[in-house]
Image 1 (cartoon, rainbow, N blue to C red):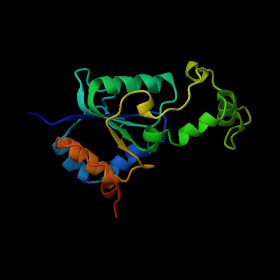
Image 2: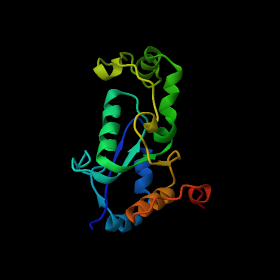
Image 3: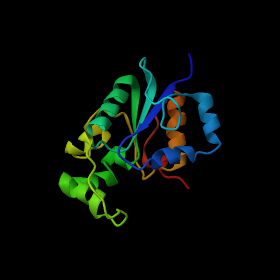
Image 4: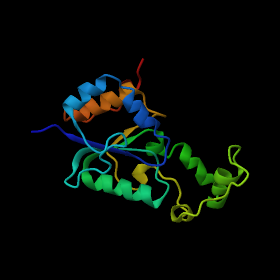
Length: 180
């Protein structure tokens, strides 16, 4: 049997979880000996294989129809789906938007921010006109493994991925989520 195929993508978030994945440093070489790293935001391939992958990893919450489509595609194409980071697990910082109307959020983001120039205006984009509450991944598709953290520690990510690469479901109890 070949190495398990792994794909990942990011949704509404800061991409910090993928940065934390890269923070496993030289252990990434050990990891790619165990897995076939397929589509990720940090590789040339951008979509999981149509024939499917063994492990799919999603970072970020779901805040628009594009994020929803990506989550549904990943769920359809993977055997095990991992929610990586607080945004994927709980909605995280992007879910703070849920306390405001879409109009208030867009006005603050594009017109009122301190970094906006004097001509600040809300972009005309169909994705911005579809009010959607920010959701955790499991609110849209079934999730098999939850890895909290903002971002999760690189050691935790390495532990989860190395366990999955060896065909084991990681033990996500407190003792394995606490690293020194």
